[in-house]
Length: 163
Image 1 (cartoon, rainbow, N blue to C red):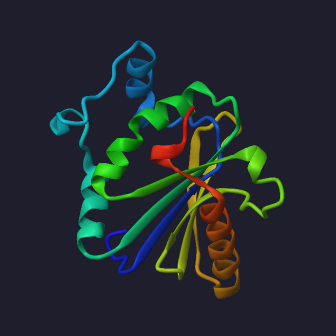
Image 2: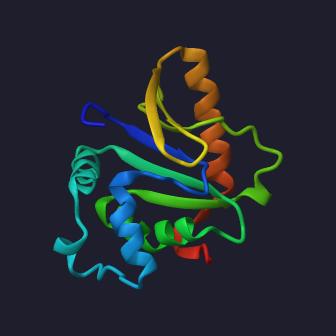
């Protein structure tokens, strides 16, 4: 993302992630802890720095999440933390899976940078991160840009999505 110049889009398609970096925060959230958005020092992290830097350079950052309903606890956790992403400069939308049946959805979560490079994120069945795979073939990128835009057009802005 550090070399991105115009756009960075992120598509998330899983209902559960088993990312060890989030285990502590997710457990605390399940126990009732909620971040105070006004207390930036309590939640701001290096990812937020990267986003804010990119947005400061003029990069438009969009994230779309396709979710099953009723949503899983993990999605409730993500939804509660999304104002942090927005404060850093991302635009975030949600698409209930039931509204995506006629769309062609990529098989893996992904980032697309400047409509030229895809970073596919591969996860195991239980949601553990496996690896990132880069792809820059123009035809593959084009298809995935189109798929993201179809999701984005239909998705519900964060402030309007109720769980």
